[in-house]
Image (cartoon, rainbow, N blue to C red):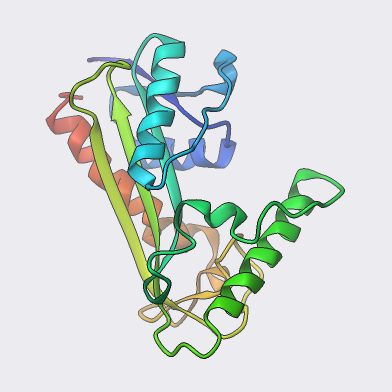
Length: 211
């Protein structure tokens, strides 16, 4: 499939640039669904893989071609995998005024506070960020490509670091000696769950789709 157009089921410019860099020299042109006028899909499912597949199929049918989607979040062992697929709104949707970035910070703070409260008195703090990537050649593709990346660490008792977003200030990575929010962007992108999933997806695109 030389010069394949692959529609990213997201309007996140940062996610687009990350995937472009990680897929590198493959014969793929990534475009966001928003640039094609495609609305975001619903994410009603209880698992990352189902949500990612739903988003990929939604983009594929609207674009009439290949698409790729991800679903990501934080899973805490002692909480049975929670927050899981509701990681972005673990504390519920928190009303906030201002620009998108301001609203996101308010939501992140509420989510982090709820997580710390849920772990109060629990000694097992093991957790991981997970990214599930799904690619389909068309919306009826019988063999979606699936890649999963996990970035393991443990939840701190309080936030540390001012970089990143979401649960980054709480997830401590032992081999790096800091939380994710204490890492510069380049280092984070080398080690992250998304980087690990994308490396797997790159290999699948080469092997199965012959890119």
